[in-house]
Length: 252
Image 1 (cartoon, rainbow, N blue to C red):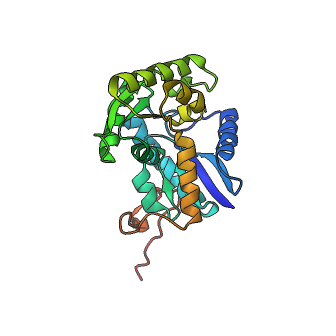
Image 2: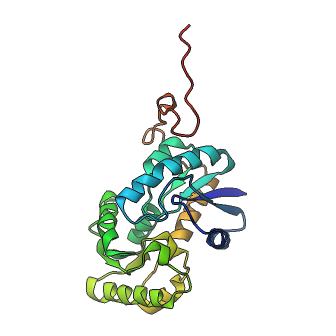
């Protein structure tokens, strides 16, 4: 059995939605994979729609990930911004997967040009920045907003699906996109990908399934981040950052 932690970096996810996501996550992965959805330690943002909220959530994510890592074989960051991915890879010995990184690179393998459907106009600059960080800005032909604040997203919202289809069709017809993906894990966990893909006529990638499968595959094959690229931090300098006071040196 491969145990995967899906770590939601924000706080305040309703219990029923947490249970639904855990059920969906386990339906998306093979029988030998067991996914547990955890929420990061607070305080923290209730959703992540800005760089301020992105940075705010990282300390809680580090504390929780460090505390539970011995219980899991891999960890997926439960936000498409991949907040704290470098810090988490330095901190943990188990593989850490970011949904955006995994999905963007998958998009670049299945298509020459892709479009990113983000939640808000305000998050478009962050999306462009991520594409640039992964050296795929030239393949990302557009970032389009579907006007869906995270806390308003409902997996049964047909109007939201219509907006995703409308923006997706425009991306294909006007921007030349050959693949699409939703840039938000709440959009991903709505699990309306198949019907959207059928209507837009190009691959519509599912970040949740891609990230979870990658984490499970890495764990199964013994793949993890390189300690040369992601060197372990000096824990003695971290004080009580991780909720564990650093050892005090003996002067004797």
